[in-house]
Amino acid sequence: MEQNKGRFDKLSIVIPVFNEVATLNLLLDRVKNVRLDLEKEIILVDDCSTDGTRDLIAGLQDSQIKVIYHEKNQGKGAALRSGFKAATGDIVLIQDADLEYDPAEYPKLIAPILAGKADVVYGSRFMGSEAHRVLYFWHFVGNKLLTLVSNMFTNINLTDMETCYKVFRKPVLDKISVCENRFGFEPEITAKIAKQKCRIYEIGISYSGRSYEEGKKINWRDGVRAFWCIVKYNLSKKL
Image (cartoon, rainbow, N blue to C red):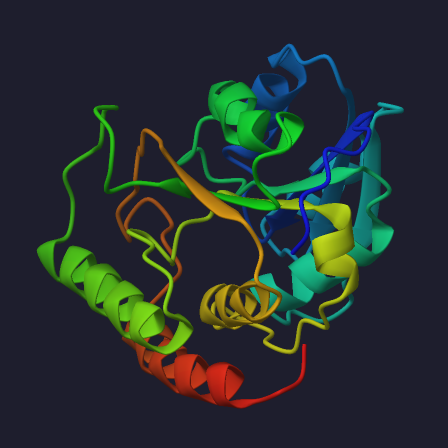
């Protein structure tokens, strides 16, 4: 993709939400407290929550926040697809609602884009010196293996393809049709930005992962699907 500094006035933060009543208010406080030289647009996509999250969202009174409701649970990819369509910012950032990722790191995540160096930035849990909660060994192995196989197909050298923190210049997303409804979004979007020859940067981030008892949702079936998505979307010519 050709170098283009452009003008950046607004950051759209897309937050897919499913049954996060325990963490959503605190997450939103952290997002709002981030100081940036850009206007912030917060887009909440409730993916048919059943734990009271929907009622919590309905009670929010904030002009910064756009709310989209799914009437049927479809998955993270589907929620992001809806959020991307509603985004009006020059830069679009993905934020999970579970407090695993810290919004205080927004400034360093968007810095390569603001400097005109990058079209896409990934926040990597596997590089840098930031704090990381120690959790599941086999999840770590699975993430590294998925990233390795993805890199073999895309011929880009990522350390963390499965990370939540992905930041895009809006024109990059405008060329992409998100097909995956669940966590297959991660290898799909990676394949599609690689095909655009985007300038991709990685930034080391902290990670405060949660356990399944605390609400973690991804499972081994999503890992199997991710391998299929790597093959499918790298071999397809469509964006």
